[in-house]
Structures are given as C-alpha cells and as structure tokens.
Length: 74
Image (cartoon, rainbow, N blue to C red; front, top):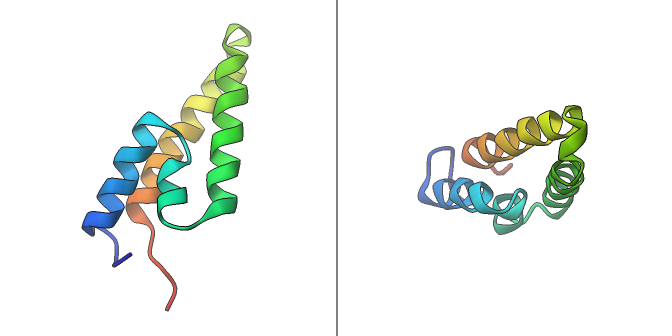
C-alpha cells in the first residue's frame, strides 16, 4: 500500500464498512483484522445489552478510520 489517502486505503476503508476488519486484512494486518472483527461480532451479537453494541459501533468506526489512515512502515 502507498501512503495515507491512496487508492488502496480507500478500498480498505470501504471493505471495513461491510465487514469490520476486512480492510486491515486487505492491507496485510492479520492481528488487527482479527481484533476488530471479534470485538464487532461479539458486541453486535450482544446488542440487547446496549453497552457492547455501543462499543462495537465505536470499534467499527475505528476500523474504518484506521484502514483509511494506515501508513506502511518503510
């Protein structure tokens, strides 16, 4: 991936809109992808408790922003 705002980062952010963590997986960051995916799936699965759903929504937004702003270390 190129720098922040590159086409690859935009695609990764769009992937995260549909599946949390997919954008990080596209960027090759497997651990970050797993963490975002697990937090969001568990939080959304416990939606009736309200607080986990709010945490999941925040993590989902964070995953989207993280994928869009990612810069590979050189």
